[in-house]
Image 1 (cartoon, rainbow, N blue to C red):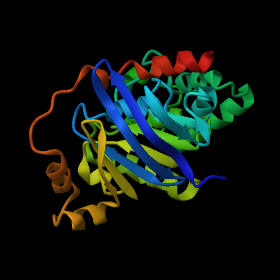
Image 2 (spheres, rainbow, N blue to C red; image 1 turned 120 degrees about the vertical axis):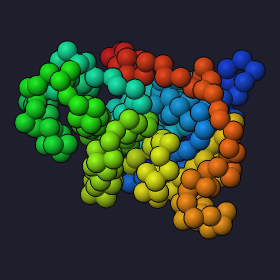
Image 3 (cartoon, helix red, strand yellow; image 1 turned 90 degrees about the horizontal axis):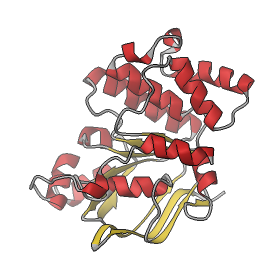
Image 4 (cartoon, rainbow, N blue to C red; image 1 turned 180 degrees about the vertical axis):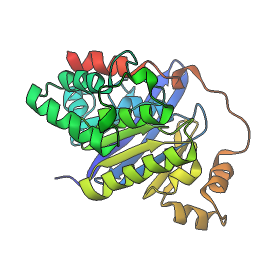
Length: 266
């Protein structure tokens, strides 16, 4: 089995004259927690959308879990889990119904779906609320349920797009403890984007993207030593600058879960 769970070579995505992703190359090892950092509009979400087959690259190559995102998109989708930045649960349904629908999309047999639903709900501490309507859940409970949903089909690669935005510190810590355990005990590869630099410090390595290009990539400690600073936050500001960035149209969320679900059903 290839060592790299994700391999990107010369990946480019253009929107007209604008290169949102400009010839980036990187590899993420199996079982690694990899952080992908960058200011608004830097190319993070575009890259993630390409890796998750929600968007085609203009040029270059991306391979996820051994499958080319252009040539074998269905196999890529089958092997990944996604937790989007914006909420994507159906709040009119129960926790059980949300997970059951996801299992149906992935063609899990009914008996297997039922067992897996109980398993993932226990993982995230929501088993006792499986028949509760999601509308009544707190923000942290919804996020945990989204993680459970992303794990329903036992993905080998898990994409987390700013998964703890807006959550209280206790819930954020609980989620990251769980993510670390997934990587350590089950060998799940985690590719995450975050604006919380202290979260990025749990990663084995981080890549910093700006203006569509990778400007540095290394372990957090190696980066702080390289730039002679005490925190990853200072590294980030040094390499990307201190100006406030506006989000560009190509970086906005494109109703990711709906697109993903439609393509998975084809």
